[in-house]
Image 1 (cartoon, rainbow, N blue to C red):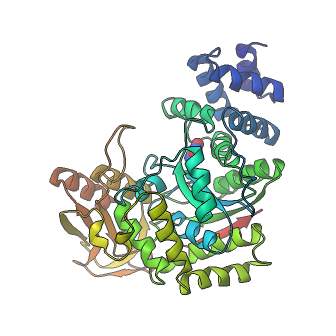
Image 2: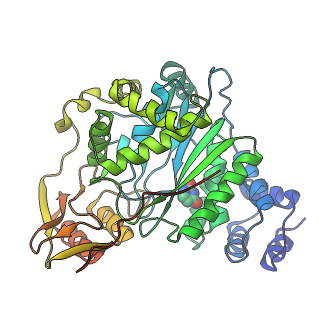
Length: 434
Ligand code: URA
């Protein structure tokens, strides 16, 4: 077999066999296939797509490139939740403790901020001392004690994805639906889970801007998971505006703790409830979604979800006192509002631009080595459909660096569009697949 023949076959729209896929992925990991050939292959896939069978074999080979966790020693169903990424998208910090508090096991391997989107690991690391770099042994030990642990991808987990992702990042092949599906699913399947709930974002702040594209990605991932014998559900959810009220790492931790205390923004509560309900159904803890929603509410009302969050923070070396004293979290030195210059209704928010503005403030990375400023971010004072008076605050920016603030403010100003008539508010949960 030769890589060049496989590249040509894909370029002409052919369907690769399992053996050909295996040859490519193994060869790339073993460095017998160089970056330039793999880049050509990825670009061919970006133009030609992949069949469900090709995606399944690519995912499986990427998963097998490293360790596949065996969590069989833990009695109970293992469930995880994964989002394709958004702005203010913080539900993992609520869903993981709520689902674990009800008795399911949540081995969550989360990601860092990517492009304009935030990352669960960056949010957790704003809690002083919190350690997301557990070894596989410590990860298993924490799961055995608490039913839940939240960590980053280790070197041993799906290393083919790490290598391929870095290459995609510099060859313009990130926003390719089959490659995203294989990338996400290879990591999730290596976690040793029985069931997975996917939150597939669509809208101006999502990687998949159109709902149809998001649905195709959801179907592809559900198909891959099911072909590996796992239970899956994918929710197509709105990302035309930031989720909740706060954006930025420590700010989002505060918003999550508020939800766990039975308060918090309505949309964050609603989405966390729905995602948790699906985890409960797939994990066999309840018979239907309504019972799942009620179980989530019970975990919040009783304080069990908050207690589980506290246990996670403690077991992963974080300071649990932040739960009662938010001043222990990083705080920005300055705050300033973005004022409306006309009266009307918020019609559109360019959420990708908002995410980039936050990244520019320091909430995200410009390069892989950039240091994050966990304190900075924004409060979303007005959302789509809200009435705004001239001179009223659209949002409030929390910052530490004046020059970065000015740049971010300019982008934020460009992100808001007002109209004289009230527009329809976006529907939060658009569809469920699987
Ligand atoms: N998240 C991933 O893990 N992989 C992708 O390709 C895109 C988003």
